[in-house]
Length: 417
Image 1 (tube, rainbow, N blue to C red):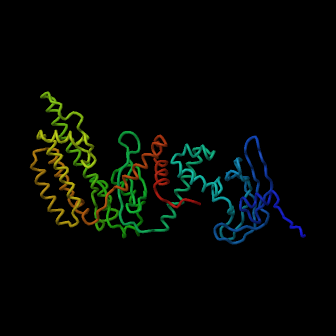
Image 2: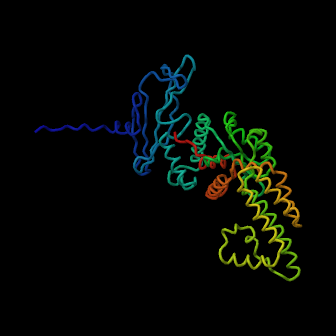
Image 3: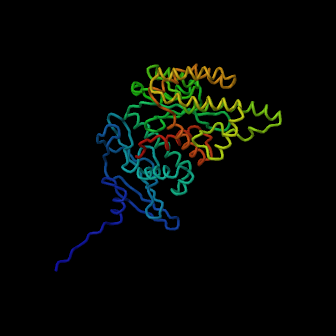
């Protein structure tokens, strides 16, 4: 009976295989600190030649750099670190260059595998603080890795240069008070293209120039936005008039809703002066979509509408305008608007009249909806996700970190090393 002989790898061979090292990189030593739950693996380079990182030509080794360390994936419960003195080569074309290491990218203190793991954990947690606890790294280290990941993803996206048909532009509050960020989104793919601090025309121009390359601008069919003049002017300057502006129907509904609420406030004040509290605590009834009313709200509305209130007439005009978005031909949408505009401007309700005149000034952007039928619904959905990110981070004092967090979680970037 023959005996089968098994050859087991040495400890150095085991760790070399775990790290994916190949000659001329070798394991020099392994230091296990059980009390500190740390494992340090020293790696050496065992040849006199190395490849130039710029041209790939084999060149003589000039010297060794100072010892550096890279955080690696934990091995069992031990926080693992690789240390090495990386050689520098002398290239005839590129002079003195540090060779590339197989375990890490340039100017990184983390291995590629660890970076990948950090990205996956932070995407899953949506909170740097929670992620750092699991990963046993500092907040600053996590932020640095997120920045590297976003930069990697943005470079790859630019190289792909894929078509973008519909772009949404919206604003998002950044800090307390009146500080805003402008957001550009790819409506069809539901992703953030870029973020820029502020909401002035120059901010929107910077945003659009970064978010949409010159080649992509030729593929853009339309842009969805509210009636904020700086956004509109920036769009026309950067993208051009061939891609029409489509005013977002949810912003328009909100705009008319504010007019209805102004009517309610004025009438409520008058009624209270006469000793009537008819409109007390009815604000959201007039603003809420009637499709979402509960039974109690339906009964309340039926009782109120019988009183012939001004706010009731304003509400009816608001609801009537919803029909505008159903038209698929521009001429029929325009015909409806003219009918609605006449009723609104003859309603003797000042806030409604003002709202109607504003809509008429932006009629082109309203009529564009019939051809493109796009909204900022995807952007609003991303806004909810951004709000959760902001809440998890307990706010952002640094806009650069805010932008990185948004692109990291909402950019749908290819960020893995």
